[in-house]
Image 1 (cartoon, one colour):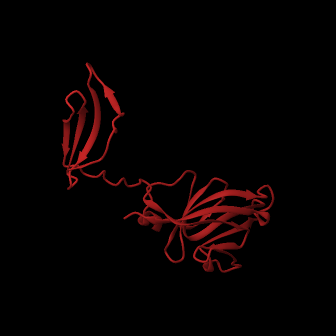
Image 2 (cartoon, one colour):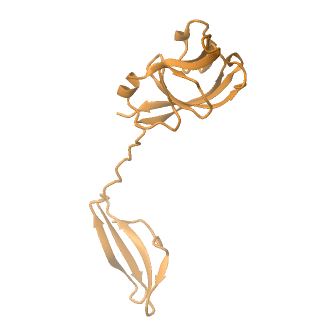
Length: 196
């Protein structure tokens, strides 16, 4: 057995009489057993305190979110009729063809109510007011390809044109008190991988 060293459990502990106890852990070569020993200064020896066997690693804790965050991330800004391509990390003016971007920002005017409505579009997209949990490919399949009324603090998960997944947050919207043609939406994003 090899020693994992020295004064691990709160260093030296004093008990009655003249004895001092110095604890150490001794791990077996196959990592299947660990012994806790203590040094008795009056008898000048290590004594066995207890033994634990069949040590197993802590099982991996799976997130309840249903996805893992990958290393690819960044920020971007969109004005109306602009979109973002995640692979090239570039903002693109898409005009009438939003199929050339992974997420797009647009608006329309509703003459019946003399008002505008704004939306984000993607292959699949859903808006959340808190960090989303319990996400799966089957659930994403049921989502729409648009989401109305973007607002600061909203979270989104989208499926891109190539089938990748991204987690987004709206950081701010400049000029939100003006017509949507003046809006500038700032996003931060991270690529994600769905669990399972």
